Image (spheres, rainbow, N blue to C red):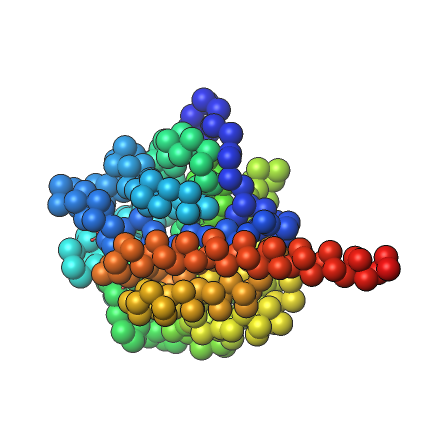
Length: 378
Ligand code: 1CP
């Protein structure tokens, strides 16, 4: 525990109830990357400060985390701590720079397996290396004043391994794939070492105040079904199991987002996560049929619809909320992060539409239930 002052009571627990499978009066909504470059107030902050300086300074991370919550007052049902998935490679000893307009860059990526011994720390003490994230979480929980729950997160082992080998974004991931095909044993060693840090880091985030956790396997879909089964899924499963075991009664709902891994959602629904987040390649009907109510589904409007103008946004958001149903086991979101050039008004329309349609759907469902009760009594 990094703080002993009790947190303010939670005023909106909609997303936690949806995660637990309890009925909700409308679908809760948040957006991946909601604190970020599409917000003018974030861009202004970035003129003054380097990306990782914001992550490492709890006051700045808190300020940026709250930006979308303040701007879209009452429209977002969760906040996500401002940080990045690449803080884990940094904690393991690697240098990561954020190049404006380009994204992350590793000046010394892992090239061959022998580089692991040279570049990576044997043991990572997250309470030392990532304390700044825990402090930011605790500070943000207080600053949120119970308005909405706070989500903590990590990058999944395969996605982090890919960045550590590719040295940044990549179209083909051919270097990381060379590792898994040529050096499977060493790849598993690397994945295990990353997994250990992910577990400690997530547990620490909950002790610091995170009320829900999300694991981002952003590059899951680059693996075919067989390789996903070997190089991603076992580690995702380990993370859920070990985090829950370590937290015991303090365990919080966990969400897994494996972008592009459409073939894996059945498997993802049985490995210990309460929520499976979907990209936009699923219909609500097929995702519901495959997962059979075992998990809460999250997602999944194509983020690019936000460029399509008001009519397109309203139509797609309506189809999404009606398709998933707003009152049980559903959290509205985009199918991936919001893009940096999206107009702030488009995000607002998306959120307002999800609220409106969610309430309409819930009212219709209630009316139908009452009509059914009357029929039964009559
Ligand atoms: O509201 C939020 O979600 C903000 C916190 C956040 C999160 C959850 C950021 C801030 N990054 C992330 C996760 C993250 N980072 C993921 C998983 C989600 C996803 O798939 O989008 C990934 C893959 C990264 C890696 C990363 N960091 C990229 C992608 C690069 C690529 O390979 O294409 C980029 C561009 C970053 C930088 C970054 N992270 C976050 C912000 C606001 C930014 C922009 C940096 C800047 O200001 O220049």
